[in-house]
Length: 472
Image 1: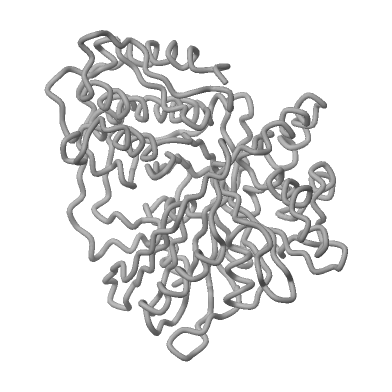
Image 2: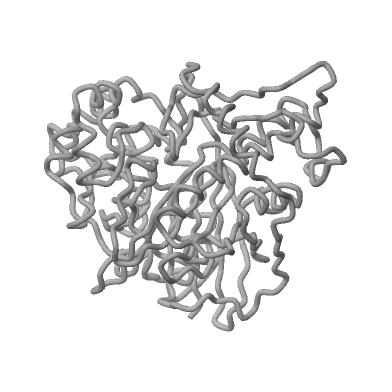
């Protein structure tokens, strides 16, 4: 099979082709605008995303199957009759619903979301965003009264517009805070809690199955896989057994570890049970998810501040680790996710002095992302027998200094995949119905062994994290 994967991420859309002989390549990359209308708000233009997907499909040409991965919690509203969006895409990073979330917490509703969806109350998830659209977008309310409103995550919008199917997959639905993890269906009580009409939501389907067809190069090509980008990455890393784990360092850092058929609930650890994938006719495969809101975005922010110019300049440092020298950075620029779930936290450097240099500050940023990731993996390892090796990918995996610090923090081998497009690869393998790792054409793996004793680093960093909390 010749398979096209569309990797629709937070900052760009990629078209990826997996040839019948196993060769793989990116055929098109399209960046899209990031809009910040107000502090804490993050939006995308849905029409721009659709146009970029169409351009990637055109560049890929004829295929036997298509797979699409999506941003996860990002969502919008559109007209069932015209397919036209009536809201912007509210991105997963957006925290405009924080006040609503705090009210729901104060009223004691988090027990319901944890029990049914397995998720804490947080603006990160789609439910409160969808409610915000209903409350604040008059066109959405008008469509709802006319029975023409469609609400959903970006995948449902793409599939509706391009393939004529109003559906989402179970991995994406599991990130909305509206799906019951036990049944794999929309939960009436959760929909009522958030004020989201269930009749406006898409059908939930298995990850690998039927999602309509898209016209490419003059013929209809079936869409056979649709899922969240992080779950696609997990599959692309070759994780197949309980305990297998990966970390992707993109805009945020996302760690997932497979738990098999077991739904592993750990609200006291700040970890999220989620669906990894589901084949049509089979039971869902579950995973534990732990996220860090700012990873590459923190590095890009430091570059925008003028702390460095070229990424090659921060591949290595002559000085000992900043944390050893009493300098720490907490990458809470959008609050703290797992295990703290504290949107009031703020990013900070602590331990600066008159001799602190820009290089020191950047070094601390890289270490801060590694140390925050270490907090997540430490919580996971208490619940899942994670092995002594973790596979990573994403932009920060190209930085040797970061990878070595991460290995030291995790006290595990860090395996950096030779292929950088593991999310798209996982999507393509799923669309092709392949259970193997698809690695026969890939060489050049890098492995970092833990070298430095870092027993005290976590304690020092933990104190810095506590300083960052409650700042806003």
